[in-house]
Image (cartoon, rainbow, N blue to C red; front, side, top):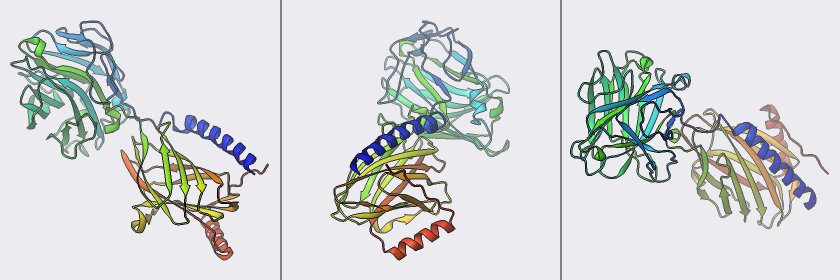
Length: 435
């Protein structure tokens, strides 16, 4: 039996890798729709090729491309940075490609995130910078041309950062201090109004190097804008001397916070309830790998957090029976909270099992969207069972749920009732092939 199980484990591992490549690549990866690392190394920004999601070439003859690029904590970075090398007020801009609108991120009611790195040097005595998404590039003194609109951020040396909107002229929200001579990660969250007459709101955040999003925004501003006309990404600034100008780098736009900090979605285990041993890893990031030592027959709960807007995940786990009692069945239940506060899911929010299989039990019955019962086997003390679970996730940047597991030896009558209930709910049985 042990030889058969080892063969089954190898087969299941290969199947898991194939399913990850086919099911989890592409739609399950969080990625910025626009990403500008300024990796065109030509020293003058004007005429340089833009990054992902942008079109044409950059305009901005007073902006210099310099190396190396800025860095901030574990934020993924590449390429160079740019600064205004002309000293006087100058703007730079580039045309949006079709991707932002094509992803629905300019639609009424949609949510659009952006981020960029900025560093203002102590040497500057008169520095101001603006960063905007709009119909035209911003101009610090004159705003935008007549009819021009935009939304973004205003930066001041020594005084701070402000959320900003443009409707010909610029208006700003409250100001949050921004330290000079240090790199800051500026994050914006734009919530477009439900219709053309509803206000659009931008919230600006200043995460630390741990990349944890603050609970409270640093600045907020609302205005009624027509984002369907927005086709330009731009910034402008002035400084005396120019070497003290703000340095700009790592521009990202996307659908979620994880998109704009370069995080592809992932899975992590949080708190647990019960006395079992547990080790876990998430390699690749869309798959959770668990190794457990079951020391009793009591429920074992673990909280699992999924980030990056993943639509489904795979969980591979190995469980060692160290309870001293043979198991004839094994329950897996999805819910929320731990221990006595645990509540099974109702299956209405999108969290559910898609499939489940094991090498140690002959059958797997899906009792409900959030519960599987494995039966028809005998796992003796000291033996291991492997499981592969596929779950569908609710919509959202971050989803936290509990996976409860219970090994047991049910009475025959109980098994019969569970089987009938599963049949009535349209459950199905998967049987493994025996050697």
